[in-house]
Image (tube, rainbow, N blue to C red; front, side, top):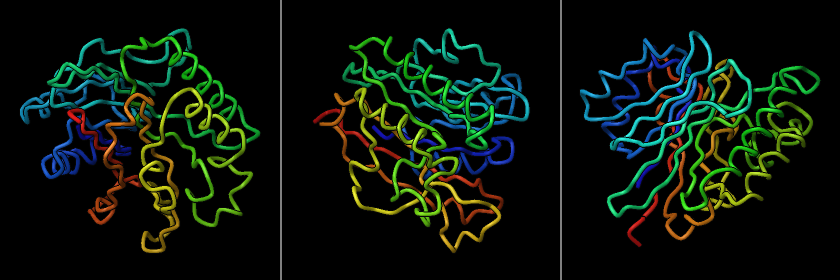
Length: 260
């Protein structure tokens, strides 16, 4: 099973890139973030013509998350229950493999936070806490897979010039502590599990030439511990940054062998 995640920074702009990437890479599930369109404008018909199922939780101009799947999902859920939030940042659904194995797939767009002393940072921390609390209520018989743009670089390996990022947004001790809470509650950072010492990034600032590679690894795919025996590959595909008008993020991929 191939699971991918990609912050496309406007699906309207990058729909052809997404379709081309799907045809070339054939993921079973592709989770998208920052679709930046409301539900009425989402191109469900185009994905359907390509034999795919699509699910979306969006709003005009900002945010928006989606799941594109080669199988129909069940029990699709939007947002974090009991967390009042007008911003559309979470969607999930249950994917059932041919062997009957169920996984709940999440596509999450965690708030950026803007600055450590801002109300937006407080919102980010509250969002993360509420999401973690929600995960604790999930059916333990179903394995969870969390994908998305976390807006957190978990360690010094995950950002350029790591010393200068120590007390800034995306790398602050508070944010990294929350990322570690996901791991402590039973999740695996798939890229770091497969690539313990690799320095690779999933996001680069548009204002800095991509060839300088001054990026950060802030996009992640986390697996429930029960899926660890099936984990085979985890990698970042930065080829999309060579496209015309690329997103500032690139796809990340995790592959499982659920027949092993």
